[in-house]
Image 1 (cartoon, helix red, strand yellow):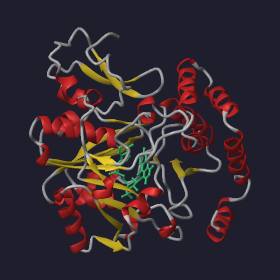
Image 2: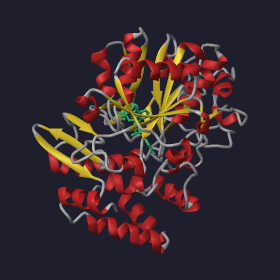
Image 3: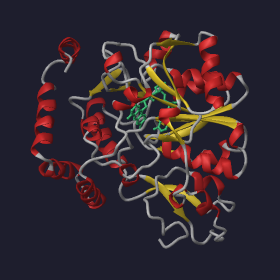
Image 4: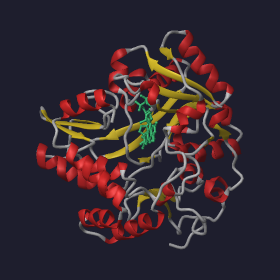
Length: 395
Ligand SMILES: Cc1cc2nc3c(=O)[nH]c(=O)nc-3n(C[C@H](O)[C@H](O)[C@H](O)COP(=O)(O)OP(=O)(O)OC[C@H]3O[C@@H](n4cnc5c(N)ncnc54)[C@H](O)[C@@H]3O)c2cc1C
């Protein structure tokens, strides 16, 4: 479609900023042929006012965030054990959401929509409602609710591209100070075509893809493992990183959005008040419960984290330097750019995603192939034993 947002140098990340400001509701976030939500303009409704272009970060090369090296870093864990167990790392996102509600803000976060099997932003006004936001959903979320969420003061969680888009909208509207923007470190989001394949595999085991519950980072043995847990009528499926198709493809950086491969926002500059991540690295390699790395990027961010510590909502643990923490995150980018492009094109027209994955593997350098084979071999070992070996031998 030839529309007002077509000429951008970068691919649309589906952040939702244009959708949030369009005065005539001409924009929808729609899944494209590659399996990603992108902005889709209805030409018949569009009045060419250009507001969408004003807030689209793809047209703003001068957008300057704050460098994470200058942020105030904390190593934190919620003081509530069930919260830590339910969340991906230290449960700080849940503590922040509860803090927002207690101060009279609306809180917008991401839930897993069990009916449509997608990740979706929602707005909550009660402590009960924020429970759905606990735990990372490793999928691109549909952020259409931003349009409503930016109408009143709020805490908003999102990926760095979503937060950069919101920062731009709110700054244009001179409303940035009414909002606390919280972003996560982001590895990127995989195509829904991969998720659909995963759903097919899970439904073979559980008899249906209309699950009763779904968690992406169930801490089966400890925080360091990645394990999907889904339930249907009392039957449970566990998808561990070493065995599960979804995780294997995700951690090979395969089938992420083109926007993720070229993303400027997941790197060292932040537009948020707070950035959250897993405190990976040597310091907490023996910790089994989970520790969050929390970067306070603004005065508002510092004040909120200070309050949570002061009120014993979170426990402050020993931190490393900012540089050391960041060493364990992928801050640079992705290798094999041309291959990713080619594979995404194959994905667009494919009727069997497994052929695309096979093709990708066949083109990888030998070192990467060996790594993949080793990972596959390790899946033969029972999970609990693998966990004990890893813990003691420190692979
Ligand atoms: C797609 C994705 C990629 C990630 N990549 C990394 C990484 O490379 N390195 C790293 O250290 N951490 C990464 N994280 C963040 C990590 O999983 C934890 O969210 C973080 O450690 C904070 O943990 P927590 O226990 O405080 O919060 P959690 O319990 O994980 O809560 C996460 C918060 O983020 C929001 N959220 C959940 N899913 C999404 C989504 N799909 N899109 C936007 N917002 C969402 C929720 O509203 C919730 O408030 C990623 C998360 C996601 C969703």
